[in-house]
Amino acid sequence: MKEINSFLKYIGVDDTDLDLFESQYIVPEGMAYNSYLLEGGKIAILDTVDARKGELWKENLLEALAGRQPDYLVVHHMEPDHSGLIAYAMEKWPELKLVATAKAVSMLPQFLGGETFPGRTIAVKEGDELPLGERTLKFFMAPMVHWPEVMVSFETSEKILFSADAFGKFGALGKCGFYGEEDDDWACEGRRYYFNICGKYGGPVQTLLGKVAPLSPAMICPLHGPILRENLGEYLNLYRIWSSYGVETEGVFIACASIHGGTMAAAERLAEILKAKGCPKVALSDLTRDDVAEAVEDAFRYGKMVVAAASYDAGLFTPAHHFLHILATKAYQKRKVALIENGSWAPSAARVMKEMFAGMKEIEIVDPVVTIRSRMKEQDIPALEALADAILS
Image (cartoon, rainbow, N blue to C red; front, side, top):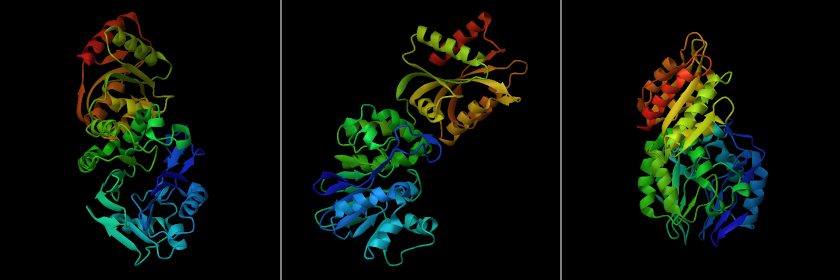
C-alpha cells in the first residue's frame, strides 16, 4: 500500500513472475496491476487485480481500510487482470455495491461462475456521478478502449483521471518507477503497450481523448504502469499521434525475415544506403528473433517501412507473414512501404506481401520491388539505391 495523497491510496501489486502478458507479450520487467482506494467520507475501491497476486492485493486493501468498511467497488474494465478479486470483495463486505457500465454488469456471470450480485450493482452511463462526500467520481464511457464494457472516471475536485487501460505501459512499478517522472523512457514501453493492446481502436481512443483532454487532468492513474503527474500534455499528445495513426518519428523501419542470412545482408546494406542518403533514423528488426511486439511498435512509430522477406513454400516466410497479419489486425494504415523479396528459384514473397497490404488502409507500395536471388550481388546494389530513393521521396 502506498499513499498518493490524503484521500487516495495505491493498493495495486507488481507481478515480476509473469513472462508473457496476455500469454503473448514479453514482459522482461514484469507487470503492474493497479488498484486504488478513494476516500471522501464514503470509500470506493477502484478495480481489483489479477488473481495471480490476490493475496498481496488483499493485504494492501485491508491495510488501507484499517478496519473500515468500503462502500463501492468501481469496475472500470472486466478483463481478468483487473477483475480477479471481485468475488472476494463482494463476499467479504455484503453491503458493498458494484459500480460499472451496463455491459460490464452483464459480463459478470461470464467471469464469476454465473454470479450476478442481484440488488448490489449500479450500472452507470455517460456523465453519471458517484458522490462520496468530499469527493465525486464522474464517469465517461470508453467502449473498445480496448474492450466494449470499458469506462473511465474523473475525480472532479482534484482532477484525477482513472483511465482504465489507457495511458498504461508494460513493466512492474518496482522496475520502472511509481510515478511517470521517475521513468526515463515511458514512451518506449508505453508505445509497445498501446499499439499491441489498443492499436486497432484508434477511433475509440480519439473519442475518449475528446472527452478527457478538455478536463485538463492534473493526474492520470492507469490500470497498468506508473501514475502520471507531470508533463501530462506530452502523454496526451503521444496518444493523439498514436490514435490518429500519425507519424511520431521521421525515418525508415526495416523489418526483415531471413532464412539463411541472404535477405538480412540485403536489409543491412539498404540500411547503410539509407543512412548515407541522409535518412534521419533507420531501425532494423530481425523478425525471426526479435520481439514481434517491438516490431509492431516500430512499424507504427515511423512513417515509412521496408519489409524484406524470403519466399517460402511458394508463399511468404512464416515470421514475415505473422508480422503482417498482426499489422492487419492492429489496423496498420497511412504508411509508405517498400518490399524486398528473396527467392532461389521461384520468388513469391512480394506477391503475398502485396496481397496482405492490399487489405490495409492507405498503404502506398513504392517501386521498385527488389528481388534477390539467394545472395545479394553487386548488380543488386543499383536496385537497392533506387528503392532507397523511392522510400525517402
